Length: 347
Ligand SMILES: NC(=O)c1ccc[n+]([C@@H]2O[C@H](COP(=O)([O-])OP(=O)(O)OC[C@H]3O[C@@H](n4cnc5c(N)ncnc54)[C@H](OP(=O)(O)O)[C@@H]3O)[C@@H](O)[C@H]2O)c1
Image (cartoon, rainbow, N blue to C red):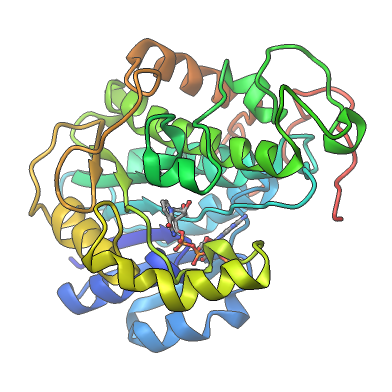
């Protein structure tokens, strides 16, 4: 039986390189969730058509994640073990939105939803279909760590996290003040709007670490290999799309040269090799729930990220923010647990 790999974020950067690597190294089927399947030109060029399927998925939308899970489940085959044939779930989609804060239709911070919450719902929705030994990988980042010097140079100060509910509001407190950047004025503890956007990204990446760590301890994931993968700094990907023209030029043309000289700098291709060969195909040894970097070494993580009790609280709380549908089938999502959701901002 051929296996199925489920990927998010495979239209560009790391995810695209990972899909290409999977296609080169295995004869397996690849199922990608993408916001715009029609525009996934590079992905279609990277993976043979008879092994690739692309379904619509916005990881920041509960409705979309649940619909994707229902469609994905219809494509999974039962193996001899009675489990499904899902050999890996690679949660790579991630956005670093640097404009004004946006909220989803459920009233959740859009970056937290797309980078963290959507992947919790996706992985939970496929949990019982994982083949024995399946790899489930979330994508972290050194930006979560206040001690990361490369990230600090780009303006990050580490994650600002108290609990999942506050993170869902894009705030560092557990309070219920839901005003966005516009209402907050210019300053927030010395942080301007750009700084707060960087904080929200870094916080979502702390939650990616928590996700893998907490799920690895659950009976429902026994037999799976969970990890949070830190791909290093990968200049040249689409991640800097919200930056100004000068920085975008440096990101695409200059910074890629640093990977030969600066520790912590990688490329999408190099990190994808580590992800696929090491974590998915078993070339690296790691304990389930660990954070692993592109070099194959344990990724340096902050003391806050290493707190397994906090990780378990995060996962439990995340599930209450986006409850799973009653059955794992497409259907109308239940009511939002966050009252009076702010309207979606597009500016
Ligand atoms: N580049 C770095 O230095 C770096 C460092 C550490 C960690 N990371 C992480 O690595 C991962 C890949 O980033 P990258 O650098 O390869 O960036 P990228 O080239 O911008 O790729 C991001 C991918 O995520 C997808 N995506 C974003 N928001 C989505 C949503 N709401 N729903 C579905 N898909 C969504 C994008 O799809 P569309 O085509 O629809 O936009 C794209 O395929 C991210 O999780 C990022 O946080 C990157």
